[in-house]
Length: 157
Length: 147
Image (cartoon, rainbow over all chains, first blue to last red; front, side, top):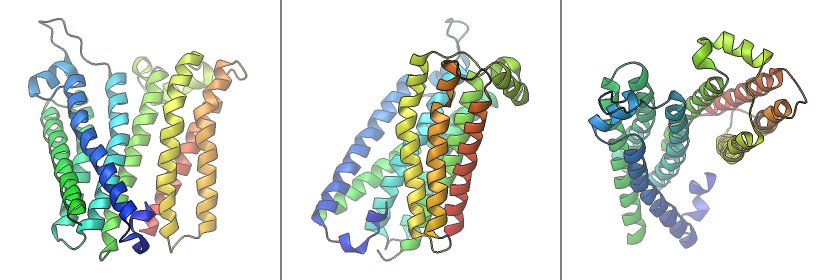
């Protein structure tokens, strides 16, 4: 992403439009990712628990470790790219703000905490499913706010 | 572009993300080779060497296709940060990155040799995976050292 740092492109209209478009696509991705995880894992404590540990009364089998791990493997890859692009553009546009550093730290640490907590919930304790739920919702929410802030700044130019 | 040091933050996190991606990928591979039933990594490794799990061509294509794109992109994004490095020469970065690409392709296609019966033992896959992971860790180390 060297092109995002290059000074020569600081006033390029093309780069502004490209950044706006990719951020808009990522904003939509964040929404659909929430919907996808609501279907696959669940977005409330009860459905997460049913997915991970099954439900004996309703004859629901727990998720297979292969399936869960594959989801985590894909999530790590997708989160990395979405947040890497988003944070690079955010730093480019808001590098003068003190909060930028902490927002990027929080965003990327929550993004990695979510998949790790999901695996720990499966193997260690149900407590981690609460951590997964909080970190997953938080990074999606913050990433969406960051995306809107980027779009606002780009549109104001 | 007042504060370019800020860009080091997402790059540092990227290194951690990639390590987790590699760990989950290795874990998935061992699961597909019977880690669940054998119980330990060592006995799974022995299983891979002695009798690697049978896989259909369709199953392999299903795994190979997304990995060609994702691993290629991941190596490109990780290795391109070496363009900024003032501590490691471009020559070294080039060699490591190209060897990583070669091992990535070797790793992605190694299982075809087993499925098509060119080799009986799973050694080829283990060598490919080990080379790929080691070179990826090396390039991550170089990026980390350059920050």
